[in-house]
Length: 173
Image (cartoon, rainbow, N blue to C red):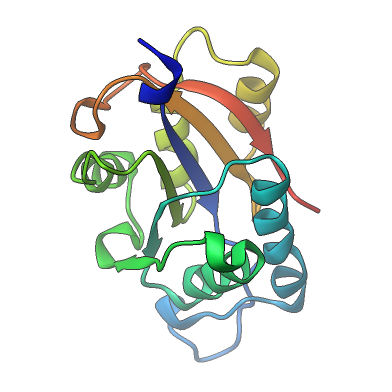
């Protein structure tokens, strides 16, 4: 299949969150470190020409704040994100189900969600021809602000398991 048919998937864990007393998990904000590091993810995406044309973001406050920082770095190149309640506290099957319903017109999709689901879906999708260093790094830990970039030559609806090649795993710091 030709290069222009390749779809890219960016899986991002939200930036470092705070744990304020009396605040529900869904409403936890970013910690100062998260506010400092989240923009670096957007900067990395720009510098590496991995700019999403569609962003799905968990509805939790920390993911929304992460998304805002990434979007600020992407500027006018960045799309308006879509908040997705289904991505909050989601396991890999639910995350994948959300991805499977993305319109085929999307060529580079970014999903901002939570552990452990975001790491689990990255491992589930990783094909045998993935970059081994990137794969081993994402398998050994998925810190806050981490990004996995995968490439897939099929439709979003058929993405299931071991059918996307991991090209990058980066923790912008």
